[in-house]
Amino acid sequence: MAVQPPPAPTAGRIRRSTADRPVRTLLSPWTLERTRGRLAYWAVFTLVFVLFTAAFVTPLIWMVLGAMKTAPELAQLPQAVLPERFDLGTYGEAWDFMELAGYFRNTVVVAAGAWLLQLAVCVPAAYALSKLRPILGRWILALMLATLMLPASALLVPTYLTITDVPLVEVNLVNSPAAIWLPAAANAFNIYLLKRFFDQIPTELLDAARIDGAGNVTTMVRIVLPLSRPILAVVSIFAIVAAWKDFIWPLLVLQDPAVQTLSVALQRFEQDTPINLMLAGLVLASIPMVAAFLVFQRQILAGLTAGGVKG
Amino acid sequence: MSPTARSTTTRSTTAAPVAAGPDTSAAAPRHVPARSTGRLRRRVLDNLTAYGFLCAALVVFALFSWYPVIRGVLLSFQQVNFVTDPVWVGWQNFETLFADPLFGVAWRNTLLFTGLALVIGFAVPFAVAVVLNELRHVKAYFRMVVYLPVMLPPVVVAILWKWFYDPGPGLFNSALRAVGISGPSWLNDTSTSMLSLVIVATWASMGSATLIYLAALQTIPGELYEAAELDGANLWQRLRHVTVPQTRFVLLVMMLMQIVATMQVFTEPYIMTGGGPEDSTVTVLLLLYRYAFVYNDFGTASAMSLLLFVVLGAFSALYLRLTRTRS
Image (tube, rainbow over all chains, first blue to last red; front, side):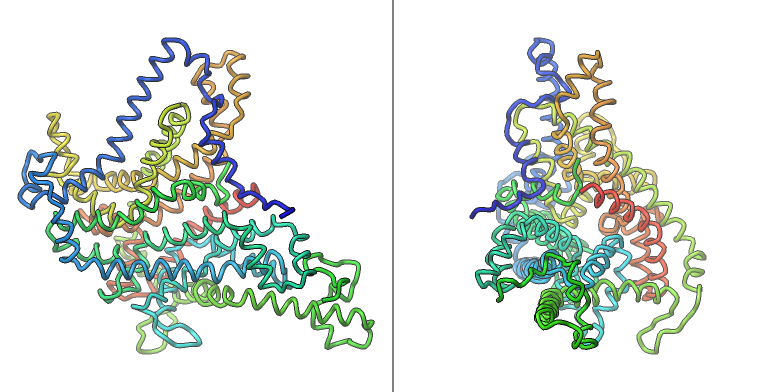
């Protein structure tokens, strides 16, 4: 293709940071070459390494090990670091005891639905606002972006009441995953990110497609979307991570245990579940996101600075 | 499609009839030349297509964003019980709130949380980012582990840390005992309960702030440091006069974002303390939740949302203004 897609606003910055070419920072390279500088550097490095591992890795290992200890071991007062037996059985036991399979399924349904609906709603809207520019388009965009000013929690009560009796169609969405999907789709931040990206795609490219006889849907699907992969990845990651982590909204609208997500269910079990099983449940609930992070680390970290928070 | 057809995206200001809205096609079709009628029809069609693309978004925003905003304001002045129609009660909901001693307590606690989170959660990630930016080895490891907690569901973090904070066999007091210190009772003591919540919240979310600062630090041109050094600036002076001014914008934006986020703290107190001990961790959102879903007083809960909005709206508006004008 003749015209290169505009790079995501942050992609270059992240790439530059991962390349380990020497960049002049606070310390001069010259200082680091002297013996005293080198010693100080390695001292600080070791300290930071130990602190980081203690602060961010130890708690997770402690959780994984804790799940393998028995209840009496967990109550013991000088707490042993390692369990007496490395027994993965607790994980299976916790899986059955809390019936985690069902909650995993519910969470996947909620997250996948929220993700797909957000894309299906926000991508065409951003395309229309960026490239088709209908009359009143600027006003609509302004009204959408204005909702970003509202703290999410200030809308909890009225949105909950709306969900219990959706106007015009008069249905009660409580205990239905749609109660999470639909409000999630009204995401102004997605529209802002997508529109800003679409704005950078040259109009000539769309005109060329039009002259070749492509309609708006074809142009969007065949020209714009393939060029927008970086921003679609960012929006997708935000959508899925947010749906997986969300607690207060599912707590309100998924009251029936049969439809609850992992977060809501774990919180409910926390009262009367043996601590070792609870810990195993926490580990299991963390695995999907941690695994996703290890696989998509680059994309996830690149998305971090996409929100316009940058130097 | 006619090859002369104008792209809808190139806004025409020279051809007046084209720039006019679609209504004119019905009002004055006779005064418009034949070629323009074609363009006009095209413009109407383009608008219809555009609204076709927009309609799903308009529906969800109308139902789940714009309508709740209006309804929230109305609800603040109503009494609702879902059996009879809502009754207008004027400022009564607000009076109920101000008469509730917990209301003041909740605001004080929330401000304490936000204040502590600013001291700890704002300074720590920046300091960490500055140090990380100087390290030249296993950078990927540092970036990965600091972000790991961000990927854990907040409920998992809250339950896990509740166990860590256990004064008996919990991780912290076990570790302190191992070096001969008898630890505090963390969540069970009114003087440390809020601080304990701030520490968890900071641990869980500092990864994103750290990496955002790190990205900002990497955009500082090296020449600035070299120039400062040539002028005889020492390490501290370079930090003070180069690093901080160069990242001022990001620091400000992150601070606003953090204030807005921490004032809505809910998951940690809800799971870890339930507001106790002695109401020392009842936050605004926890009280709002109680009004709405424990006392079923949606009117008063809405009045509280409105107050929260007024306080946070100012910060959010400033945040949006800053980020939009810069990017």
